[in-house]
Amino acid sequence: MTRFTDNVNRYLSAMKIRQTYLSMQSGIDKNKLSRILTGVQEESGSDMEKIARGLGKSVAYFLADDMVISPMGTAKADKIAFYAGAPAEKQAGIARDLIELMETLDLVVSAKTRFKNIAEE
Image 1 (tube, helix red, strand yellow):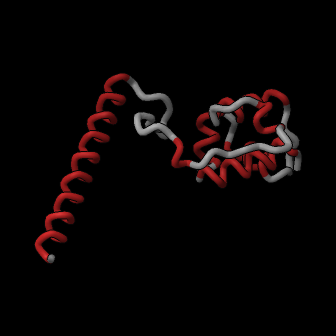
Image 2 (image 1 turned 135 degrees about the horizontal axis):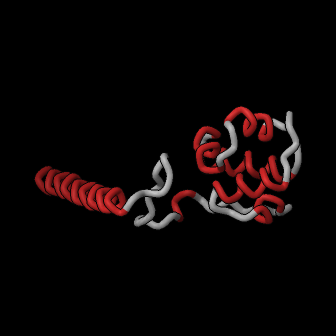
């Protein structure tokens, strides 16, 4: 395998991204993508560009000798990934509402735990 495919595979593994998702994002047929990522088929420059763009990175990022993968916990809370591609404005609004709901539920659950701990003292 090439450095590019090795680094892409490392990135996919670290970020827990499936090949099916990358196939949809890159526009590369899933069988061809599998052959590229397993080293059975050599990637073309066009394939490299599509894969990198599908992962939101540059080709140079995946060609680096010392590629650094940022931990998943560093993503901004207001960023949401949609499996089927970029969200429409209505979908983005729904996603923001869901995040707000989850944050509210988290506050309620943590308050319940605090009250329970106070009651047990």
